[in-house]
Image 1 (cartoon, rainbow, N blue to C red):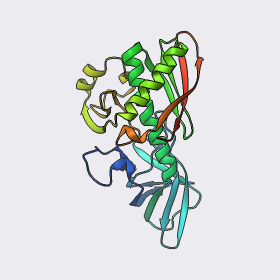
Image 2 (cartoon, one colour; image 1 turned 90 degrees about the vertical axis):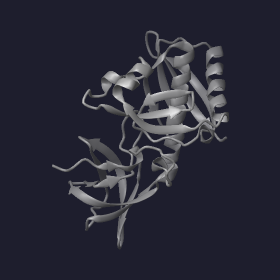
Image 3 (cartoon, rainbow, N blue to C red; image 1 turned 180 degrees about the vertical axis):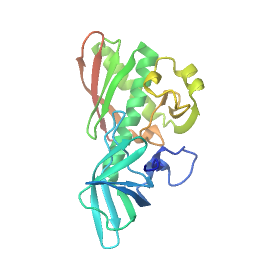
Image 4 (cartoon, rainbow, N blue to C red; image 1 turned 45 degrees about the vertical axis):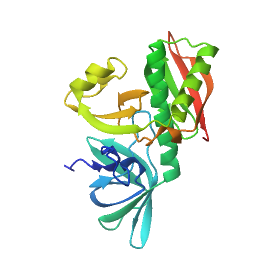
Length: 245
């Protein structure tokens, strides 16, 4: 059985450079080969999940390269679907940075929006999906008015303007449960996991999450809400885009 992959972007943010989420290239060894995928001993590629799409990019070696078409995670092993199999075990991974950075901006902005909506309206995030060009968040219980949407947009942009630090660290599950109440769906995380990876966005949000995130909210840009749709009883979906700072 292949050992779990060391996931580089999951490491705590402790001021080191390069920051784990901003790591664009890395060296690794192939430890498993499938019909159209390889697993590596370590990776900076994000595996799809948690409402965030996977990273794309390439794996290079002396004399060639393979496109990374899809990245998934199974039982701790990250599988990189490739269009060409590396002939040897040593590879150099290169992330499609434009795609990764758009997802980082979107995912961080989603935390900001989810945190403030819970704080002001008491509505928790029932689901979310990050895309490169737009994202959506489902809130429950919620029935937002046009005035509410304007306030959500303004509050999100105020957080961006405040240039808040985004911290990534681990914390004991019990301590997290005592702090987040029902803001985060901790029951969806296996009880065997006792240490949780936390994303803390200044005073705007504190939530366990496995995604990639910015260092500072000033990188988000401007939140622009596109529409609100009802998705059933007491559930509203907000779709939004990010404009340049």
